[in-house]
Length: 184
Image (cartoon, rainbow, N blue to C red):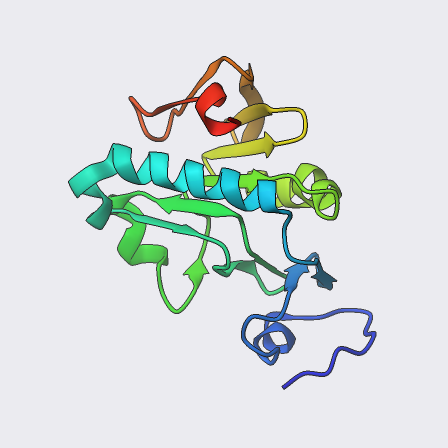
């Protein structure tokens, strides 16, 4: 087991020596610790996961839908744990191993005071760089969602939704979630 000592650069090998369940992510070769999420974060996470699962129905076995913690290895210096991720059926066998090895098709991050900087900056840049097709950022305090879609390897804001609006996924055509239900 790795004892967390300050190093200039951590790698996947260092990360894999951590105790299972340790509250760390490897972001740009740095071990980043965060406390457990706030209750509102967990409620929103459960509601989104359930809504996607209900939408997929019997098709859920074809793809891969999970919520945190689940390691997503992007490279030797980045192992992230998105709040929710989905891998399409046609890519499932390619990237679902002992951990996810490569970019999921859809990632949802729910902002908390302790993680907002990483979710809005560093992780967003990494998801864009490695080709996550749809990145959804949920702000439970503002009761809003931003959906970033990848076009020509660059994210653009496809949709901004406020409480009362519905968010419509591109990766999951036909999937929509009403923010009033999400933030009730």
